[in-house]
Length: 484
Image (tube, rainbow, N blue to C red):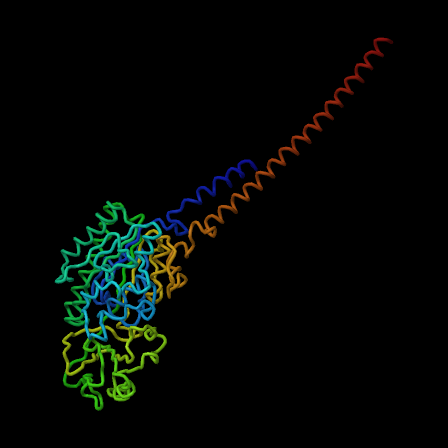
């Protein structure tokens, strides 16, 4: 019985060591990060989204996530790529500008200004490549730039006049990423960007039928991504994270709305400015001429009930938008629903973003699925700076300095943030316990056999002596009788 128990204890750990999913993160699975620009956290509530719902059942869904301030495209996406707040990574706006020449580059052309992006913070693509992985990026903000003389290994930048809403093009992009890059070229990590529902939300508003149709398109695309991964045999060793850069809020319009026009504010004059970044939604930055900072600040302070104005060093610390030298001395932002105009209202969007990141309309969604994630798990909100250390953990690389922490997302993982080579793998620890018990039982069994055999040998020897003595006595008795 002890022998059978020993064998059972030796066999049991082997069966225990092969669960359906690893209880530690090996860093060997591929990772796909997808951004659907402007997908607000609650966009799945007024639209049927069977594929996003299925992804939540198969993986993890967050109530919402909090982007960095400023809640616009390039800065928020570079936070995803670096895990740093905007004042730390320096991509402070969609627009590159030069305060001396007064030159500006709009969103698309800013993508090609290397030193705007390459500002001392490395995106995850470059860090992963330096640690032996193969990476790619399709249309993701920051893809076009060169970082410390390196570019993303496989990259595609959208053409200038690109239609971000074309669903056929979306499928073609999915095929390129899944088939060409992941399957054929065996890339380890890829970022993929889609420009809707941001475009629909701006043009038609976040509560419009057009936005709801855009969400249906997103859902079909999510289904196509997962179906393609399954057909190509990638699902069992690929994690997929889907999120966005910001949400969207309805712009207030009508005769009852007092719009924010700076030239309508008494005491304010463009003549007092050396440079300004205005007419870009609910935010603005001003560089007053030398000696006129207080004049401009005091003129605007209290100039509109829905306008907030700060000297940059006085910006609320929670916004992390004050310390970088690229930020101009005066920063303005409006309450949700309002936009900031210079001379007169130029903005016709029905939806806007760029508001305070604590405003619920600015919160994006989050989904994750794959072999390293729990199933059917709903988690609470967290900041998007934490997605970077999560991704580094999943692909097994050492992160750069960042403002996030794996502690804020590790509960999503089967491993709870443990790595298989860390020596702290709970599965390995449990195996060691059973192996130790088996060894103890085996030793006890061996000792039992030895002691039992020795005692048996002694008894047998004593018994043999007794039989031999009895035989001798019997022989002596017979001898006496014969002699008699």
